[in-house]
Length: 241
Image (cartoon, rainbow, N blue to C red; front, top):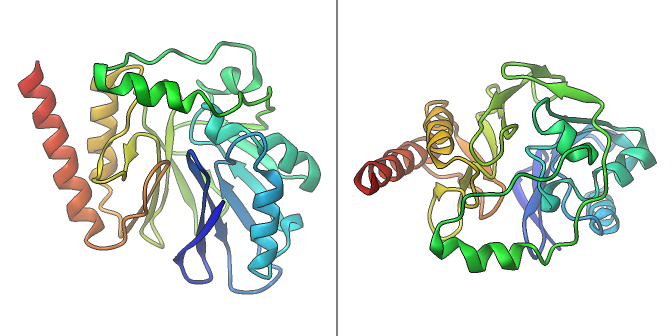
């Protein structure tokens, strides 16, 4: 796993072989309260803990784990970490039953070029059934980052969310948007048209820093790049239709 600084003393990314997660810290102090955005695969907990300690921080200060959606490379280590440190697990109401193991993971409608990528993604071990302590809704405020806003962004899954920190200009997109090679609509969507509408909604937030579920964070001209990418992908969808 690679540890990548996104915003000094505030935000770091944990990059796994497939997928990534983010660590938000409330201050530059060693005892700062910590929030995880996603939790990697089911074997990621030791690497996440080691990375947190390498920053001079304490995993015991993880207060919450926000899951952007129900997929195995985002949910995997959430309950292990939450049980160990008493953290709250937050997810959208519509994905919560899948995360808990009460409903199957929804099947995506794959484009032909997505099929080999999807098969590769399934090499990540399945996530164990994971509790959800808080079922979030669109517009809910979470107690970190100066008031983190839950933005329902369905299409990848029904309960996909983004997390927006207006005070800091930071947007976590989950898998609605990807930054692999170029900024683009994320892959493996259950409803591509809804995903595109969500992409446009996220672009309208005009963030200064964009953190994707896959791909390098966007920190330069982020608002303009995100909007142009949303317009481009929406145009491609219209041409395809």
